[in-house]
Image (cartoon, rainbow, N blue to C red):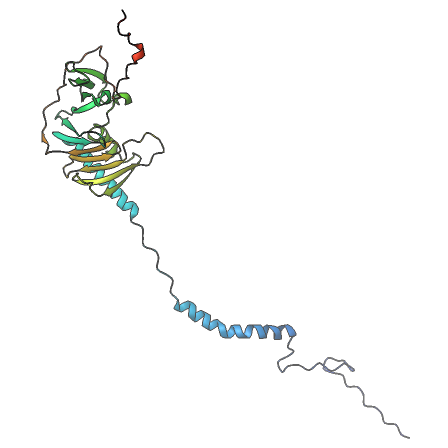
Length: 292
């Protein structure tokens, strides 16, 4: 029997004679499992991405908020009040005001601002619990309190020097009615003073342009009393409303004198009158009737 010779092994392209056949592949090469899984995930995203891009481009960003003009308006209002207070400092006049306080009769206040810068304020009931009339004045010689003839002080008028012209009146002697017409004008013109200022409606009975003034200081001693301050266009103070009461201009102002005159002579050894009423005498300390 003649045996057929087996055909010699033909080497493959890589030189291997007996190499296993390569696994079936895609026409462009093997497709790994990882790529096939990623294709399933990325496929929907490819179609969704254009829609997302379209929605992003069609939605416009919201417009920026308008600038807040608040601080500018506040500064302008503060400037207006400062300008009117400065004009009030330059006003020289004689003006009559009415001071009203709940539970008390109205009082007529006369304010004089002389051409030389001296001033005087007559305050009925300004001392001894409302029973004594006084006059406060400041001139080149100093600051004075003058006691006027009244129920609580029947003696003739006499004046006591309290200090230098720009000194503060001691609290126990201070009726506070004169401040809006005198030293508080310095505070209202000072932009560094801790104040909050806003336009305010004119209270009933007052006139002019009015401003609400509040203190921004944490101190208990505010530079001015919180309240409503009103002025005419020429700087004349037309009214003030605070917790202490309401001061309103009662008549058009008159011309100012060259200087103010004190209400009486200056007495060196006299004591000024306190605003508070004197203590009530203790009847147990008085001599008993019928004893010597």
